[in-house]
Length: 280
Image (tube, rainbow, N blue to C red):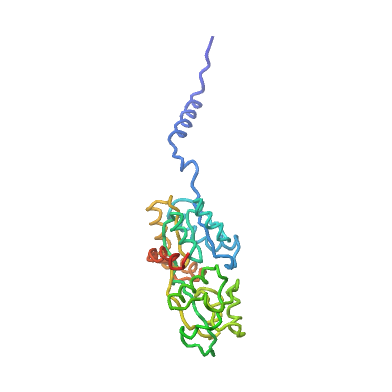
C-alpha cells in the first residue's frame, strides 16, 4: 500500500501557522482600544457626535503617543460617569465640573494626569448699580445660585463659608441653569448671584459691563485622570501630550475650542483636597 505524503508547501504553511499562534503576543492578536470618557455635564450643550468631533484631536495625539487606539466616549450623566470609573470602564476621564475626577482619585484609585488652565472660580456678581460693596454687606441679602447639589453651588458655598457667611442662614433661590442667574440679578429678584468663571452666563455678564463683587480662590478645572491599570510610562506619555498642546497651531485651536489656555501638571494636591473643601 502506498502512503501519499502531504505536499511540502502545505507542511511549511502548517508549521508557520503553528509557530505564529504560539509566538504572537495577545496584544498583537487583538489591539487594545483605550477609552477617553468626556463629560461636560448636563448643561454642557453637546451631544455624543459633537463630543467625538470636539475631542478627536486629543484622542489622535494620545494614540500616537501610546501606540493604542483611543475612542472618545461621551458621558452626559454624572452617575454614569462615576459608575464607569467604579467599574474601571474608562481608561482616561476628562470632565467638568471637577468633583467627579476628584471622586475618581479618592474613591476609585484613578491617577492624576493634568488639569486645565486657568483655574475655575466662583464669581459672586452684583448689578453695576448695586449698593453692595463688600462681602460683609451680603448678610441679609438675597442670593441666586445654581441648583443646590450642583458643583458650583457647593463651590460658592464653601468660599462664602471661608469668608464667614453661611448660606444656610441666608435667603437663596436655586436655579437649574446658570443662565437664569443674570436674569434674576437684572430683574431685581436677587441681590447677588454665584456663577462659574468658565460659564457662558458669566461671560455674558462680564460683556455687559456688570460688576463682580468677589472672585473665589481658584480650584483645578477640567481635570484629566487615568485608570489605575495604566502604567507610569503611559501616564507620562499622556501628560506630555497635554502639556505640549500649546506648542503648535492645531493644538492651540483644540484648546481654544475647550475655552482654556493649556494644561498643567501642578494641581494634584489641590484636586485631592477638593472634596474635603467642598464638604462632600
